[in-house]
Image (cartoon, rainbow, N blue to C red; front, top):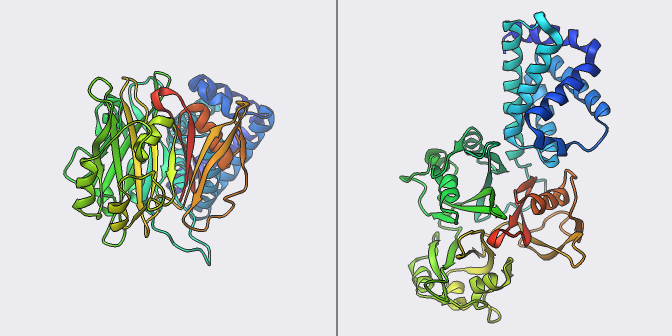
Amino acid sequence: MTPDQIQLVQSSFAKVVPISDQAAEIFYARLFELAPDVRSLFKGDMVEQGRKLMTMLGSVTRGLGNLDTLAPVAQRLAERHVGYGARPAHYAVVGAALIDTLDKGLGAEFTPDVRSAWETAYGTLSGVMIAAPTRRPRPEAGDTAVKTFIRVIEYWVPSEDGSLLEFGGGLFGPAHRFAAVSQNLCFGRGEGLPGRAWETGRPIVLKELSGSYFRRAAAAKTAGLTCGIAVPIFKGERLSSVAVIFCGDDEEHAGAIELWGNDPEESSDMTLVDGYYGTTGDTFEFISRATAFRRGTGLPGMAWDAQKPVFLPDLGKGAGFIRADSAVKVGINRGFAIPCSTLDGSSFVMAFLSARATPIARRIEVWEPDASGTHLRRSIGFSDAAAKNEDAFEAIAMVGNAPDAAGAIARAFASGVPFTAEPMIAIPVAPQGRITAVMALHF
């Protein structure tokens, strides 16, 4: 922003301060008119909420002359709003409501130059806030750095008119450039990896991002991402979101992701549709392609039969993993499988197989409804690395809006949309369009 623009924003806001209560009322009325779905995000006294809004705007306008100081404040504010359920798509609506409020409140004094200055200020601030939730905190002293096989998870949600998929959020770790590119995109049916999963209505494994239809190949290569898996999530017959999981590997870090499928009109078995095997070698992939599972047999068959996630902490023990010998030889020791959403009667299971040096995530949890139907209870909880507060709660009320992990898990179950609570992402599991569980992955 130029000094003149900063002065215009600050002087025009000073004229709004005497009518701050009315301005806040106008703002929220316009916001709920433009985006009725956000009304549910506000639970408290709206008069008090309006005063908090005006106080925040005052602090922001005063800080425009020193963006280095303002940016961390905006980032912390954004992280809290992500916990409340705010999505990147909401920022454009909030900006429109703000401009309309200023136009109505200032009247003739809201000149084209003042409007332009406010639009620039809001664009700068919202850019910082959208990027903030993708940043992971640096490990504290004594933390052990763990390089997980899953490097990035993002999710896309239908636009208000249902014609596009818009960026919903995600966890990007150190892949800041990839995050920045992603936040500015949207996809139509059949466009890019999210759009193709939307169009086909089934999971897609894209084993090579470079040289493909993947639109962010250069940024992905820079971030060390080599494979993408898009999983559409349906709630009933409606697409609620598309989750996209990205993996990376090198000579020391390996794992595998497999997509298993069954078409009941063709077979009673579940066979390998596609897979990404990193640096595990050709032998394990060959054995996998020659293997078929009946319902309830093997890791994919168990998830297919249960219609909920299945976790095997040690593939070398017990009879649950048929390919145990070949898996152990290439260093794969854990397996996690989830049934996927489809609407055409076919069944798909995504299986994550992790090597010893590269866990799927720092911690894996699965949350399922209890018998009362009022709470979610943890049915699986496993950590390959020390994770703080991993046993902080055992049950979660299904109706929750807290800006923490429990609130994110409850909202994911209720909405069919993933939610983040750094450094965790909660992803609904919805085979055949029915949400049966939430998997929480901690990074």
